[in-house]
Length: 256
Ligand SMILES: C[S@@+](CC[C@H](N)C(=O)[O-])C[C@H]1O[C@@H](n2cnc3c(N)ncnc32)[C@H](O)[C@@H]1O
Image 1 (cartoon, rainbow, N blue to C red):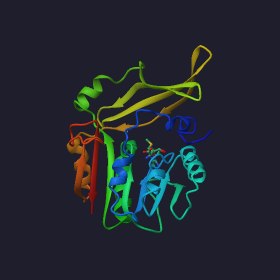
Image 2 (cartoon, helix red, strand yellow):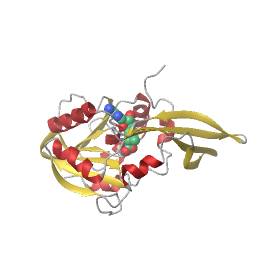
Image 3 (cartoon, rainbow, N blue to C red):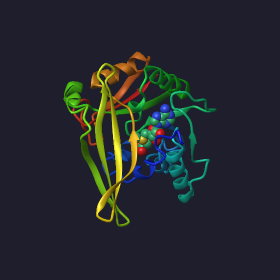
């Protein structure tokens, strides 16, 4: 059995219509058109490919072979050479690379997938090691609006909540979420994302993705960055101009 938790779910990633339109945001954060960028948790290359078109070089790391395979296929299909973009297998909390980067990013809430403090410490240690002097890192988590107490009320149930549905090449695909379990002490939600396709007249369960989703209030997210010895450069509440703490996302840019 594969130890890649995304082995079956990876094929649904790129059709998810609820992923925020964050690509122009990350393109606008490039310090120059020849900037060297590291994407932590590059997944299927959703952000990596469009960034490759406008930066000097981008390197992606991901621990899911299934997500990476999709990224590599797309790089090949787009004829993007390895001098411009590469994506490799690795753990973003513990890695060794032979170069440093002007900008390090982890789009679409990668940081909240780190369940333990040791993983969080490991990621910040790597960021410190691999940023050039003056370089910056941008991390993003979802904003638990109304606070953890409100979020908590919806959890601990086997009820499925509809998330999205799309039609791809005549096949209906959908995702529901089971708000199954949470750890109130550590403020971690443990959702099950259930992916289904419509066969004949019925929905057939195809893949289930079980992930941790660690929750940060706006001030906690900034504090964890400050506690690791970085300084905040800028912060946003989303990708449509929302103020920090007032939108659906928490996005923070910081440097050493
Ligand atoms: C929500 S996806 C985001 C993908 C991409 N950044 C994007 O914006 O589309 C999260 C990705 O982070 C990867 N990931 C989570 N924890 C990781 C870790 N410790 N090391 C490497 N990759 C990790 C997952 O395998 C997955 O591909």
